[in-house]
Image (cartoon, rainbow over all chains, first blue to last red; front, side, top):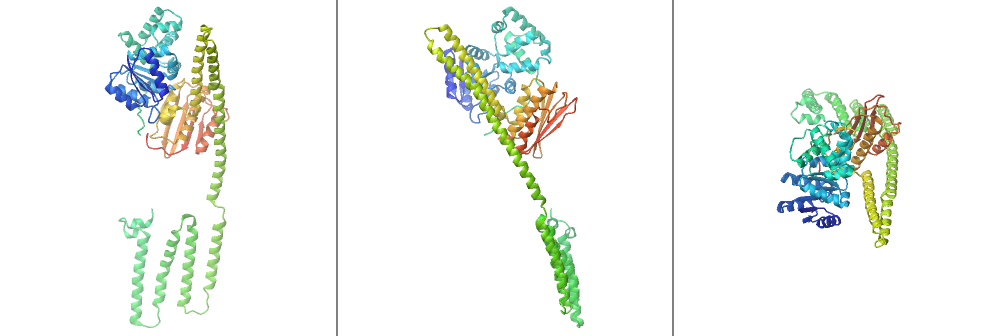
Length: 230
Length: 351
C-alpha cells in the first residue's frame, strides 16, 4: 500500500515513516509542507495520504485545507489527518467532501500502533475513522435528537465505535459480546437510520455520516474555510 | 463644514457669510465713494468722515467676530470677546479723533473693556477643566484595570505552572521510573517488563492529554487557526447542549482582544451548561461601529447575576483592560442573555 506522509516535524515524520514501513506500507514520499504534498499527489499514484494539521507557512490548519483540496482534485482520495488536538468543526469540514476515506485522529493514537495501522488501512479502503474524542462529544450531544433517538443505548455505543473505525470483531471484543450480536445491532442501526440496501462497507460509512449530521444545527457550518492568504 | 467652502462650490453668494460680507464691503465702498465725490463738488466741513465711520463700524465688528471664531474650539469665546473689545476700543478712538481730539474720554470705556477681558481670561485659565476631569477619571480606570490585568496574568501563570507540575511533569517522572525499572528487568522478568512498558505508554498518553488541556487554557489552537468566529463555532459544537451561532466577523480582531473575548464567551457558555438548566443556547457575534459585541443567551431558568459566583466577575475583569463592558439580562425564570462589548478595529479579512 502506497503512502505519502506530510509532517513538518522531522522527528515525528521519521517515526511515522519507520512505523508504517515496519508494517509493510510503501512510503513513497515524506514531505514537510502542503505544497510538496500537492506536488507528490499530482505526480505519484498514492493509496492514502497522512498529514499533520499544522504545517508551514502559517502553522495553523494547512493540513486540513490540503486534505480538503486533495479530495476536491480527486474525489474520495483517502486521507488521514493527524493533529495534536481534535475539533468537531474540523471533522465536519473534512466530511463535507464525503465521509468515505476519511481519517481524523489525535497524534496520540499513533502510540497504539496496531489500532493506528488498522485505521490507516481502513481509510485507504474507503472507511471512516474518527478519533474517540470526537465521537464521545457527538455521543453526548446527539443522543436525544432524531434519528439517533430511535437507537437504543447499546446501538448508539456500537455506532460510536463504528465511527472510531473499529471492525465488527473489535467492537464485539470491546463490548464483551459475540460477533453475531454485533451483526444484529448493526443491522438494526441500518434499519432505524433508513439506510438503503447497499454494500455493507458503504452502509457503515453512511451510518457514520448520518450520525455526524444528526446534531448539526441548521444553517450552521455551511461556510467553507480557506487558508489565510500569505 | 465651514461656510466659506460652500460659496466656492456653486452656492449663490448670499448663502455664505463671506459672500454677504464681501457684498456689504462693496456697497459700503460705493456709498463712501459717492459721499466723497459729493463733498468734493460741494466743499465745506469734511462730513464724509462720519459717513465712512458709520459704514466701517458694522464691517469692523463683523471682521472681529469672524477672526475670533477662527480660534481653536476651547478658546473661541475668549478670542471673540477680545476681538470685539479691540474693535469697540478702535471705534471709540476713531470717534474721539473725528470729534476733534480734546479731552481723552475713551480711556474710561477702554479701561472697562480691558478689565472685563482680563476677568474673562483669568476665568478661562483657572476654571476646573472638564477635559482635565475626564483625564483624571480615565487615569483612575486605567490604574484599576491595569492592576486587574496583571493580577489575571499572574494568576494564569500560577495556574499553568501548577497544572504542568501536577500533571504532565509528574506523569513523565512516573514514565521515567517505569522505564528505569523495565531496564533492570530486561532479562529476568519479561512479563513484568511488558506490563511496565504498557504502563509507561499509557502514562505518556495521559501526560499528552494534560499538556493539551494546559495549552487549551493558554491559547486554544482553533483561535489561532480560525479567529474568534471560528473558535466560537468550534466551541459551540463541543458543548453538550445545542448552541446556535449567528452573525459573524468580517476580519480578525487584535490577538489580545480575540483571546479575552473567546475566554469570556467560553465562560458564559460554561455557565449556561453548569447553572442555567437550559435546553439550548445561542451566541451572536458582530462588529459594528468599531464595537465588537458577543451575546450569549439561553432558555434556562435565569437569575444570573454578578454576585452569583458564576465567574461573571472574572469575565468583567478580563474585558476591562480593553474598555469592554458586560450587560446581563436574566430575570428569574429566564431567559438569560449576557452581552459583552469591546471597542476594537478588525483587520482586513484573513490576511
